[in-house]
Image (tube, rainbow, N blue to C red):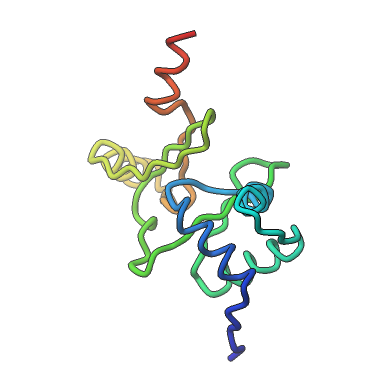
Length: 139
């Protein structure tokens, strides 16, 4: 088993993900957030740190669209973010965890009638959140 070292950069990347746990973040977004906080960390270091955190199960990696950057999200100690759907705002990037009986019924229907098991950890519905929708209404 490989020993995990808690370097300053690792802690900074993890803290950034924890403080933004409601959304997926790309490595570029993490670098940008850290720079806004006065932290100078290279993109390569961020990628390497993210891959190690993914391997440890501390961070989940999403590839939402072909040709787009991978996104990362902190996974809490309880392993939340497993058995529910996600809504992602295309305006602000907010990620909403959605436990909804209607979607559970849809998931069950898809399996029972089409013999297809939906993977909730990778199911993301894209649209515009309420806050961004209100901003758009004001234009």
